[in-house]
Image 1: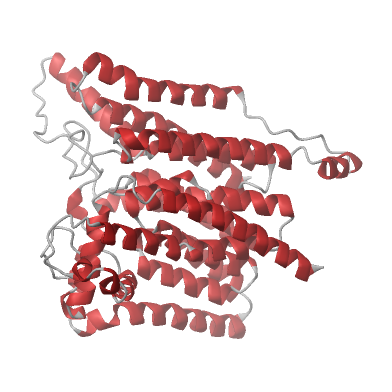
Image 2: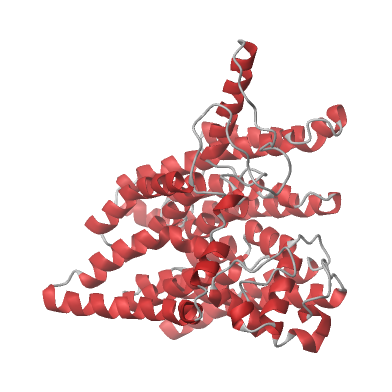
Length: 509
């Protein structure tokens, strides 16, 4: 029975894989961001230069700033690139080398690397009932956020999130050592995943090591050796050559400022607006308020400026706020270290990092929406919450694709995602067999529908899109060009803040 079930699961997953791969191939000619040249330059750096020069090279403005394992990943890909086009790995090909050869090569590397995402989904869902299994596959594999960010805008989030899901799956199986090892590997690929490190530390300490003095100490040492070994393998050569400070400075460029110039929809949006409102009011009242010459609304990329009235925010402040926000989750993980709750805790940690972190990019919302897809099938309330937050997160990524020809793509992807969620969750909570079981148990029948407040918020989201995309250009043209971005970011920030509060309440109950 289990053998046939696993075969059916593999066939279903292959179908999801085939559909998503077809869509990704169709998206190859679409808009491409500067991240194309960023990663092409990294291919050239790691292929053309010795390891000792990777983190010092400044041939291009797109310097290498990811941890060493990702640099080695780029080096691995660079072995295949010359077979397609030698100029791909030529460090002096010039900025924005955009021949079809490099576009197809890089697009396909992202598609192939997504195999880790499929493996993560397979391991997490292989023991679930068919309906839940297929729903998770649809939510993760067909995620509009991942499609937009990785396969249009261009990044490798699916590959890295796949490794994270594999780690979570091993924790769910009770194989804590492997789960911890894989998370250490993820950190050495992309350091922004470190926000969930306190959750892993507390959970593994309590669940894996807290089993008696002798056994616990042995497990603690074993876990420590495994994690340290991963970091030594990744960072050891740079320590040996005395370059670790240079590597760290590249990975953590705190000089970029609190906010990306296109504000991610997080807590700092409200802080910026409050500062601007206070500055405007005080100037009207006759106070001499010095407004910084730079602006938070100056464009899509760049450094943020100081505040005019409110206290300046430092990286240490944001670190303390993130850690404080995560603390209730850490307490829960210590008191109740259940494997089935790990995905929920990780999603909450990444939500905290997104809301209160330093120089957060809007793309980081994928870090919590993908783990939340695993949680969404656990209860009716989780499904309702995910329906809202995934739509908000996906919509907040719309400004990434700002060219007219991509507009139908992002709208259609979001609408299809909403439809899949609605049909999937409705099927899950109107399944006849499940309802009969609930009736026998004396439970009330469940039905998937969102509340009035959530409906009103989503209607407001549609109005925001109409104003920013159509009314503003028609009536104002190029004037106040920052207003649509600010409106989208602020409105989505309300939804993400709501999600954070909802998740916190869920964890505390």
